Every structure is written in structure tokens, then in C-alpha cells.
Length: 447
Image (cartoon, rainbow, N blue to C red):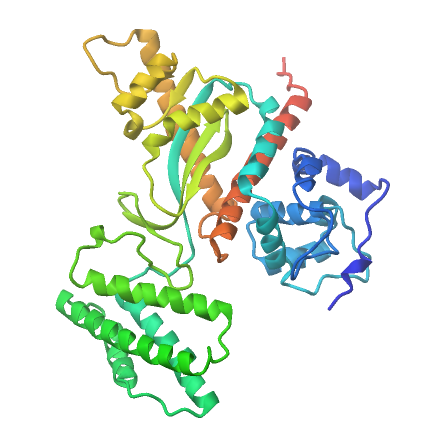
């Protein structure tokens, strides 16, 4: 393992450093308020696995770089070892014979940041710093999207079989072998052959699937009882806290699946769809290609291209109820909103009355006999166009180029942190390009 204490802070200027300052990456670096972000983390690195050798700026910088390059943790650290511009960005320059060999640094950094600061506080710092680069601050656009998590498409049969494998193969059989206990009788081997036969079929009828679910629920119930008896008799049998947490999730999955055998899914709340990510919930979006998505639902606000998060939750929520709170949040950051762009789901009577009382012009479809004037029609169509093009375009850009297509990290807080840094990195790129455009003189047309 490399001696990472050999890091040295870069002092002074060099031709390479000047090249870095004039590049897009250098401008992104200058657009971020590092001092205010550093104050969010404690000076002393405490806790298990805390990267005490790496400064607060370096930890935040690596999170921005991961979203900017949209690469894995290993690829980021390998590039950091060979790219001096990334080292300048983080404020840590390696010597020629030094390199990072510990590829778990990013995991520890994410765990450290999530345990010491919330993304809401970091967002407030960044928005307050960037709001001076916004020109049309009176126009507020809002919409909701889902940032999907990296899981295979969940089905009841897959989830039940995954739970059965964990109970029997990962825990029950290994504990019996370790303690010299006779294995309790079960139909696990027969059900394993039946599961292989079921999964090999290209299509399975509803009756076959229902029969498979009933068999797996019965097997899982029996396995949970047998494992619980052995744990009670052997004082936990050496299971750690993660295993006990997983066992609790499996018990809840078994109860839910037993409930779904006789009841429709709409009556079940907080349905677990992934054993490894039990906090995920099915988000019904009604899209043509993806009617249901599995990830975090985000209510996003946008002001002159600057995007920030109003609400981020793994449970489904109705975004139209967030309009009043979003207007209040916009007022806190940018002042009162005069124009508002949103799709038709926001056009409820309560929201219309609220916007009329606050004298906010909206792009909602007109109600009543009084028609819009020609100027109002033009303004309404322009706001709708901005929401449908600029804002929807930002969603696609963030998902395709800033690591938000499929969130691969595990953990509720870590996924939210990755979504936050992806959106804020896109904002930093936008601010950097705007500042560069203001500095460069306009081109003169040839005579």
C-alpha cells in the first residue's frame, strides 16, 4: 500500500499550472467555493476508515471529478496517478515515483462525506455562490424525474429465490457445517432444480408463476424458522450486524410476498423490490418505454439553466403539491418569481389560486371565458418551450454524461450524494462556460 502521506501541496506557478488555469477544468475549479465546502467537514479526521491523509478539498474535488468524467472509482484513481491536471484540481501533486494503489479511497470518501454533512447544506452553499451568474432570476421552471438505481429488473420470483439462497446456502448450511449441527430437513435442493427449470423457459404462464411464488414463500418461511431456531440456540452463531440487518429485510420480504398472494399490489405499502437495496421503491412514471422505474424521484427546479434539487426521495410523491414550497425556495435564493413554467400536472385549482395571488404568470392552460392576449400567448408558449427543451434536455444530459444514468453505489444516503454531485457538476460546467464567454471579446464580422 502506497504511503499516501507523501502527498505534497503544490506551491507556486509553473507552465503546466497556467495551462490548467486556462482550461475548462481549471475554470470549473475556480467556479466552486472550496473554502465554504471545506468548513462543512471537521478539521480532525475521526471514525473508522476516515481518509485522514487527504484534505477536505481533495475529497470534494474527487467527487466532482467522478461526476465530470463519468468513470468508475478505479478509472478515476488510475487517471489521477497519471494526469497532472486532476492533481492540480484536487490540490495534491504526486511526485514522479509516487502513485495511489489503494482503490477503496472513493468508497471511504463517500462514507465520510455522508456521515458529516447533508446534501441540502452543500447545495445551499453552491447556489448562493452561483446565483450572481444568473440573469433571468425571475423565471422559475420545475419538473420531476427519476434517477434510476443499478439493479436487475425485479420480479417476485427472483426476489424470493434470492432470499432463499441467502437463508439456506449462505447462512443455514454454513452455520450447521461450522458448529457440527445436523442440517434440518428442507426441500431446498428440489426447489433449486425447479427454479432452474423455471428460469430456463422463455415465457412462463401466470399459473406457473403463481405456483412458483407459493412454493418459494413456503420454502422461505420454513428456512427463516429453521435459521432463527439455530441462532437462538447458538447465541447468534457469529453473525455480524450486516447479516442481522439482511435477515430482518428477508423476514419483511417474506411477509410482503405472502400478503401479495391474496391481495393486489396497490394495497401494499413500502414494497421491497431489491434485497441488496431494500430502500428502493417502484416509481410509477407512466412513460411509454418505462412505465415503472426503480430509483430516487427528484423534484428539480431550474433558474436560467442553473439546476437545483427541491426534493429527493426514494418513495413516490406527487410533485404538484411542491409548487408552493418551490416558489418559497426560489424566493430565498433568487428573490420573488414572476414567471413559472411547469407541465399540466401542476395546474390544479389550488396552485392556480396561489399563483394568481402572488401575481405569478404561468404557462398553464387557460380556464374560464376570458382569453389570453396575443402578448400573453407568446410569453406562455415561450415559457412552455423553455421547460420542454432546456429543462428536459438537462435531465438527459445529466443522465448521459454526468454519471446519473444508473446509480451503482449502495446505500440510501450515498445514492442521494451521487445524484447531488452529478447535478452540481453540470452546474459548475455551465457557470465556467458562461464566465469564459463573458471574458472573451465578441468576434468582429469581416467587412
